Image 1 (tube, rainbow, N blue to C red):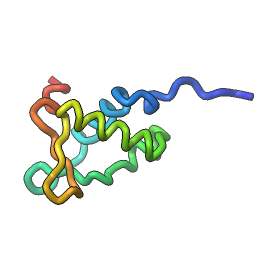
Image 2: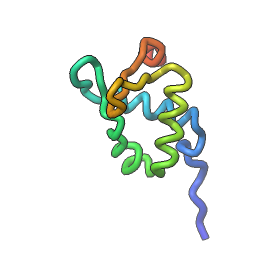
Image 3: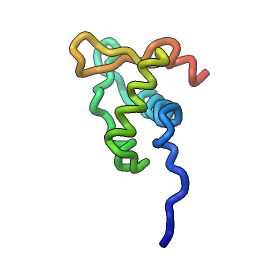
Image 4: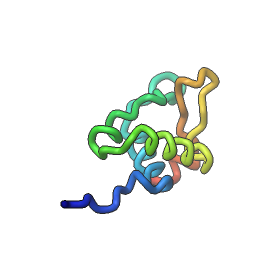
Length: 86
């Protein structure tokens, strides 16, 4: 039986950083909003589970990298999130 090596998405910080990489690559819509449900790259390319995605998203918000939009449907990248890539 073969076991898959450590999956980076099981670590909340690594999952959050991967989400930030994807968020940076997405074309934001009005006011820099990014759809919260733009999780397909992480689920299908990285093979993360929905729970791993959600934990990473919550970690990114707790770190101040992303903030919720008033509607609850979108998130915005904060300056702290943008500074991760400088």
